[in-house]
Image 1 (cartoon, chains in turn blue, brown):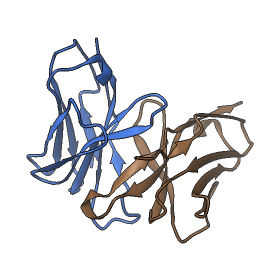
Image 2: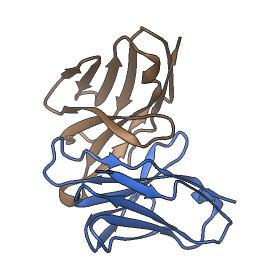
Image 3: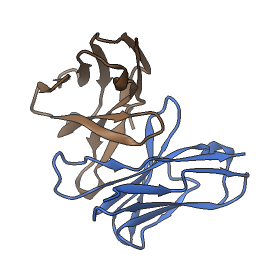
Image 4: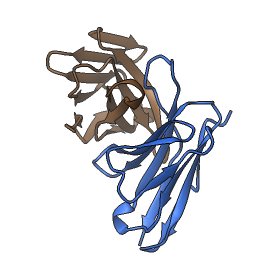
Length: 115
Length: 113
């Protein structure tokens, strides 16, 4: 049971390039989330998904797109990267009926630098 | 939305107690959480408290909740160097499947030998 995994661990992009971050979980969780972490700002929710084929916007969705074609995978896309998207990105998952409710399980993060 | 607030830094000596404070905003939160992030890693749930409790103790950890002031604290007794990490408080906002965790900015705890 690997939990939540993220690919890649590190990436450097040039402004305007595109990329996709992959999150995978093997716990059969219904809910999945993408956050970004910036110094002194905690974690901010980008997008989330409550089930296969459904996605919703979080607090800071602009410049990002997501897809959840399979229950175990949640993809985060940057179509045209900007230096303001330099951050550490975390994926998380949770399941219906757990106690305590809303507990999320996090991946190890992807450090993205946009030059 | 309104912020969940924490101080950014805390330094303590090994063996002392650490107290990390947090103020939250949503009085309807059923649970309040403390997450720990070690260097280079993701967040892990450390402990939580149900909103109808004032205090919860779990080995070296004590969580205090003051609902009137919307104040949450985490006390770590006999702090060790392995406790050095960033600690995030979080509250749950929203309803149904749209319920989300809102995190504070995190408190960097440094334990000095």
